[in-house]
Length: 253
Length: 126
Image (cartoon, rainbow over all chains, first blue to last red; front, side, top):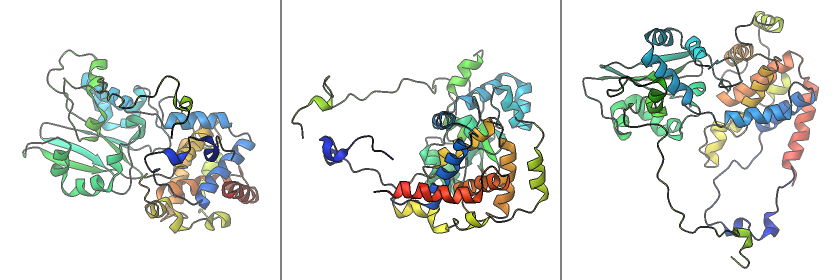
């Protein structure tokens, strides 16, 4: 592959970085080679184009939890829809435009089509995990957060769910039963949290705004005052780059 | 695409007992799977970098109706429980996809072996 630029001669190479590069696997495996070979042959045979592949890759890397939020909000407003969510979640997903079998639009990259939505009640709280790896309902929630994939969360949630939930800032009364559902390669789970007080009369769109990703994993509860799209605090740049840019800084080392 | 009838190829696959494919058997080195390799280099990403590309390939094949997603998933399940039992997730999905494409004649074993050599030389070029 042709290099996009030559670090050795550019004067802005890696020697000047203050932080070491993130570790990476420094060997080429047969699996990596196989993936490329299959893709290239498929493209050469006209089964799809390189542009198709690029689009799907770009899309798959940016999916988020908005679809899950819509599902929960609609279930809160429409009891009949909620019943369908709890009995046949895959079919209910199609009603909000998510088809787990379709790769287009808001569909899914290669997830298994067995979804169970777990309804929280005043006495039962659900939280999901994948103890084996990082199985996650991606068509609804997008990519899993890093902590969901960490051994810390995966190992400890099963044994000490209340302790782990407390670390997320969620302290539940001892009267509330905590049920941990372990996802696996063939089945995905998602939590349907209880609709919080103070949201009476809200529209579906307003409700969707407070259903954050963590609420659907079960490590947080939705609140009327907290939305998933709040403006985040900004850190001011300590060493802002001049208008001319780094390349214009002659003699800088 | 979803809800459509399974293809003749899928129906035939369900009847036949999955058999190993020699080329793919040579690739099943457990020590080189991501879950074994990543910790050796201090890498914490749960999936190999090629996983998203593999997913996109699967979606492209489904989108062009060459290999519908449901058919592939069912075939993956069967192969995962038989030929590729014990192989971890991403590698199992990759081997299963290659297996399905080879058994359906979408690729030939010779072409794939040849292309793998070309790709390997390219990636290892100094």
